[in-house]
Image (tube, rainbow, N blue to C red; front, side):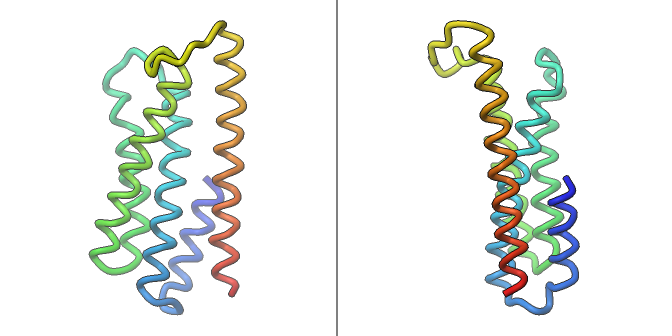
Length: 142
Protein backbone atom coordinates (compact mmCIF):
# COMPACT_ATOMS: atom_id res chain seq x y z
CA UNK A 1 0.00 0.00 0.00
CA UNK A 2 2.88 2.34 0.78
CA UNK A 3 4.50 1.66 -2.61
CA UNK A 4 1.28 2.42 -4.45
CA UNK A 5 0.70 5.72 -2.66
CA UNK A 6 4.34 6.73 -3.18
CA UNK A 7 4.14 6.03 -6.90
CA UNK A 8 0.78 7.80 -7.14
CA UNK A 9 2.31 10.93 -5.59
CA UNK A 10 5.24 10.68 -8.00
CA UNK A 11 2.81 10.48 -10.92
CA UNK A 12 0.88 13.50 -9.69
CA UNK A 13 4.03 15.54 -9.09
CA UNK A 14 5.81 14.72 -12.35
CA UNK A 15 2.89 14.25 -14.75
CA UNK A 16 3.83 17.25 -16.87
CA UNK A 17 7.44 16.14 -17.34
CA UNK A 18 6.59 13.06 -19.40
CA UNK A 19 4.55 12.45 -22.51
CA UNK A 20 1.22 10.63 -22.47
CA UNK A 21 2.66 7.44 -23.93
CA UNK A 22 5.18 6.98 -21.11
CA UNK A 23 2.61 7.78 -18.46
CA UNK A 24 0.07 5.42 -20.02
CA UNK A 25 2.60 2.58 -19.98
CA UNK A 26 3.49 3.26 -16.35
CA UNK A 27 -0.20 3.44 -15.38
CA UNK A 28 -0.81 0.14 -17.12
CA UNK A 29 2.00 -1.58 -15.27
CA UNK A 30 1.23 -0.26 -11.81
CA UNK A 31 -2.56 -0.66 -12.14
CA UNK A 32 -2.26 -4.28 -13.24
CA UNK A 33 0.22 -5.50 -10.62
CA UNK A 34 -1.25 -3.48 -7.75
CA UNK A 35 -4.81 -4.57 -8.39
CA UNK A 36 -3.64 -8.17 -8.86
CA UNK A 37 -1.79 -8.08 -5.54
CA UNK A 38 -4.56 -6.40 -3.57
CA UNK A 39 -7.24 -8.66 -5.06
CA UNK A 40 -5.18 -11.74 -4.21
CA UNK A 41 -4.71 -10.61 -0.62
CA UNK A 42 -8.37 -9.65 -0.28
CA UNK A 43 -9.44 -13.02 -1.65
CA UNK A 44 -7.23 -14.81 0.86
CA UNK A 45 -8.37 -12.68 3.81
CA UNK A 46 -12.12 -12.38 3.20
CA UNK A 47 -14.51 -15.18 4.19
CA UNK A 48 -15.07 -17.67 1.36
CA UNK A 49 -18.82 -18.27 1.62
CA UNK A 50 -20.24 -14.77 1.16
CA UNK A 51 -20.99 -13.92 -2.45
CA UNK A 52 -21.06 -10.18 -1.72
CA UNK A 53 -17.33 -10.21 -1.05
CA UNK A 54 -16.54 -11.77 -4.44
CA UNK A 55 -17.16 -8.42 -6.13
CA UNK A 56 -14.96 -6.44 -3.72
CA UNK A 57 -11.54 -7.35 -5.24
CA UNK A 58 -12.81 -6.41 -8.70
CA UNK A 59 -14.07 -3.05 -7.42
CA UNK A 60 -10.79 -2.39 -5.63
CA UNK A 61 -8.83 -3.20 -8.80
CA UNK A 62 -11.09 -0.98 -10.88
CA UNK A 63 -10.65 1.85 -8.38
CA UNK A 64 -6.86 1.53 -8.44
CA UNK A 65 -6.87 1.58 -12.23
CA UNK A 66 -9.19 4.59 -12.31
CA UNK A 67 -7.03 6.59 -9.89
CA UNK A 68 -3.87 5.99 -11.90
CA UNK A 69 -5.57 6.44 -15.25
CA UNK A 70 -7.24 9.70 -14.20
CA UNK A 71 -3.85 11.37 -13.87
CA UNK A 72 -3.73 11.90 -17.63
CA UNK A 73 -6.35 12.17 -20.37
CA UNK A 74 -9.57 10.19 -20.88
CA UNK A 75 -8.19 7.24 -22.92
CA UNK A 76 -5.75 6.51 -20.12
CA UNK A 77 -8.60 6.46 -17.61
CA UNK A 78 -10.32 3.78 -19.64
CA UNK A 79 -7.05 1.89 -20.03
CA UNK A 80 -6.32 2.16 -16.30
CA UNK A 81 -9.78 0.92 -15.37
CA UNK A 82 -9.47 -1.95 -17.85
CA UNK A 83 -6.09 -3.07 -16.53
CA UNK A 84 -7.14 -2.56 -12.91
CA UNK A 85 -10.31 -4.58 -13.39
CA UNK A 86 -8.51 -7.43 -15.11
CA UNK A 87 -5.80 -7.40 -12.46
CA UNK A 88 -8.55 -7.66 -9.84
CA UNK A 89 -10.22 -10.54 -11.68
CA UNK A 90 -6.92 -12.40 -12.08
CA UNK A 91 -5.99 -11.87 -8.43
CA UNK A 92 -9.40 -13.08 -7.32
CA UNK A 93 -9.17 -16.21 -9.48
CA UNK A 94 -5.60 -16.93 -8.38
CA UNK A 95 -6.62 -16.59 -4.73
CA UNK A 96 -9.54 -18.95 -5.24
CA UNK A 97 -7.28 -21.54 -6.88
CA UNK A 98 -4.70 -21.20 -4.11
CA UNK A 99 -7.38 -21.91 -1.51
CA UNK A 100 -8.97 -24.77 -3.47
CA UNK A 101 -6.65 -26.30 -6.11
CA UNK A 102 -9.36 -28.78 -7.13
CA UNK A 103 -10.99 -25.95 -9.11
CA UNK A 104 -8.33 -26.47 -11.79
CA UNK A 105 -7.87 -30.22 -11.25
CA UNK A 106 -4.52 -29.71 -9.54
CA UNK A 107 -3.79 -32.72 -7.36
CA UNK A 108 -2.78 -31.54 -3.91
CA UNK A 109 -2.26 -34.19 -1.28
CA UNK A 110 -2.67 -32.35 2.01
CA UNK A 111 -3.79 -29.13 3.64
CA UNK A 112 -0.17 -28.46 4.67
CA UNK A 113 0.86 -28.42 1.00
CA UNK A 114 -1.94 -25.94 0.20
CA UNK A 115 -0.81 -23.71 3.06
CA UNK A 116 2.80 -23.88 1.89
CA UNK A 117 1.74 -22.93 -1.63
CA UNK A 118 -0.29 -19.99 -0.32
CA UNK A 119 2.64 -18.65 1.70
CA UNK A 120 5.25 -19.12 -0.99
CA UNK A 121 3.18 -17.73 -3.87
CA UNK A 122 1.91 -14.71 -1.93
CA UNK A 123 5.49 -13.94 -0.91
CA UNK A 124 6.52 -14.20 -4.56
CA UNK A 125 3.70 -11.84 -5.62
CA UNK A 126 4.75 -9.36 -2.91
CA UNK A 127 8.36 -9.46 -4.18
CA UNK A 128 7.16 -9.05 -7.77
CA UNK A 129 5.08 -6.04 -6.76
CA UNK A 130 8.06 -4.51 -4.96
CA UNK A 131 10.34 -5.04 -7.98
CA UNK A 132 7.86 -3.48 -10.41
CA UNK A 133 7.36 -0.51 -8.06
CA UNK A 134 11.13 -0.12 -7.85
CA UNK A 135 11.45 -0.14 -11.66
CA UNK A 136 8.72 2.47 -11.98
CA UNK A 137 10.38 4.73 -9.39
CA UNK A 138 13.70 4.20 -11.19
CA UNK A 139 12.16 5.21 -14.52
CA UNK A 140 11.09 8.53 -12.99
CA UNK A 141 14.69 9.29 -12.02
CA UNK A 142 15.99 8.93 -15.55
